[in-house]
Image (cartoon, rainbow, N blue to C red; front, side, top):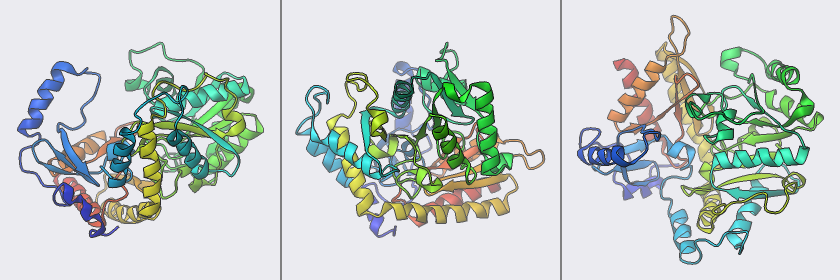
Length: 448
């Protein structure tokens, strides 16, 4: 996308970072003091700044400092902050109906969202959806539905996966620390198996799949497993892209053994990878897909979409919730789908991949502490290690994150060992903004 097309960012000022105070500024410091007095300490604070307004790839804090946002609200702002069409759709729907509870008095936006999900998720079979509030809630419902459909109890997940912070999803996370620390006992019947991570294990997709399947067959037994829940590209785990052939082999094993295959696309879905859902890149058609984050354009909403016969396994009243599929959030989803088409954002994700991978590969060639650069579309990561020992280097990732903040660039860490920086920009970010971010990274590495 050209800088001219992205001139809508003029709502926030210039297209580049612009700092006018120390970070954090005085107004952010005041808000932080108020936060510490009233907000639970269990809610982390990645950056010591407080947003006042935002547009496209720019966030302006309460002190007037302007930041280039590469976090995207952890993958939520796929079409950019305060997209005009989404804002208008929210306002229009809010003036009509804000809530009835779909199970009490239905409304068209809920149905329209389910129709869009049926059309855009992988597979040409009949599909149905249930709408909920968050990614973790979607995963929980997918497990419920799979158990009901199969009559089985056990859940299989992969190493380095992340699925949420509820009791069940905390148990499904590879890193139960810190997400489940001290909150136990956590839900049982969750079984973790080795994943495919080509950079780390050097295995082909077929070899990695054989390892995963053997582990689950020996430790659990295929006949006991209701569902296998897999992120096609692992998010919190460090944007791990599996080896070619890995996911198709797992899907075939699931279908051969009556196991429901669930793609957790909460972070990788909704156009982020250059396809509506990342499963498409691997040639797989899941039985169920969970979506959230990017589908709502900043509004809280999530979904489970799957084969109609599986989704209809639940008895009436077994699925849903008071705010699930709120009409205002549904209106935002409809606008997001429309904007992805209108702005050609699938192609923009591929442009971002080309620009960002080129820049980060340049850093890899220059700095021995850069171990790997990987990802698809606008879901790219750079991993750091100690070149002498090969061990993960979380210190470098944290130091670069802190350096970037002081230059007006917001970026998140990831990885089971905290040694990865992940790029989750909106799909309307410009090439010049991406190049500026890479330049900041280069300067930070030089300073270290």
